[in-house]
Image 1: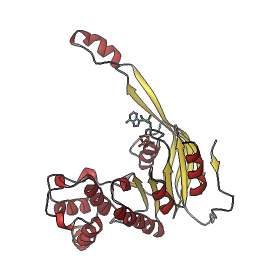
Image 2 (image 1 turned 120 degrees about the vertical axis):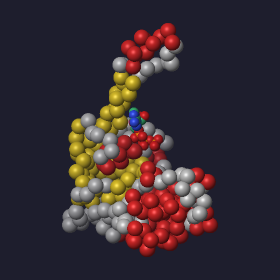
Image 3 (image 1 turned 60 degrees about the vertical axis):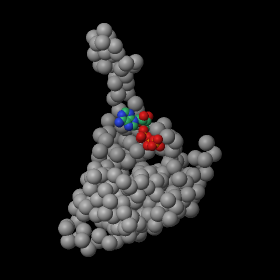
Image 4 (image 1 turned 90 degrees about the vertical axis):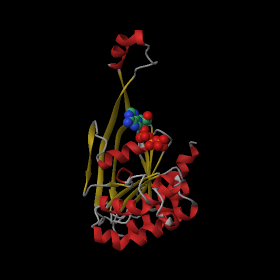
Length: 258
Ligand SMILES: Nc1ncnc2c1ncn2[C@@H]1O[C@H](COP(=O)(O)OP(=O)(O)OP(=O)(O)O)[C@@H](O)[C@H]1O
């Protein structure tokens, strides 16, 4: 059962807002090989037989909700509850086993990780990442200083990215990924690795994206980040949507179960 706080008067939602993502009775199942213990040489035939045995993980079980323009939706739930699966299904990276996701444009998952190369300098990676985000070479040059300053890594910009700490790498990725305007942006735990100062700056950037008619999904275990950034929270548990609505109400209900 989904408990919604809509209609309680706490969160007025004008009808004029455009729906941008509709998730309709979404199910995702992963098929995983259950090979059991490691096979010995003599066990080869047995391994092949066991490899055929699969287990099904039903990661999402009929999730439905609608996201509107200007929504900044926090996604909460315990480890393994299905939050990342839901986000990957919204971007189309993970196929649904039934149900559907409709979106007005292709959602972007924050993370230009695949495009960045650890052996190259921060400087080369800003250019590479900017191009990967769809900016022209000229646009990347114009925005270069803004990206470097936002990431706060200017003293290290000539060093190879493999020498960066995980926090510095995450800041650079966030700075590059949010340089472009996103209609629908998904941020999955990216803020967790930054320090407090960077977290505040990135939360501000998320608010700007939202204010520019964008829709943001923020997956986080930090209830503070969610409270500071989101106007709405959905709570997923064991693949089901438990609650959808006002951040304070949903977070209180979630915390009461912990
Ligand atoms: N590629 C995969 N193959 C098989 N099972 C998977 C795969 N990805 C996730 N799962 C399973 O699906 C379920 C939901 O996982 P998911 O990563 O969506 O949870 P989560 O809520 O994002 O967790 P966390 O808070 O720990 O990041 C878990 O049982 C997990 O083991």
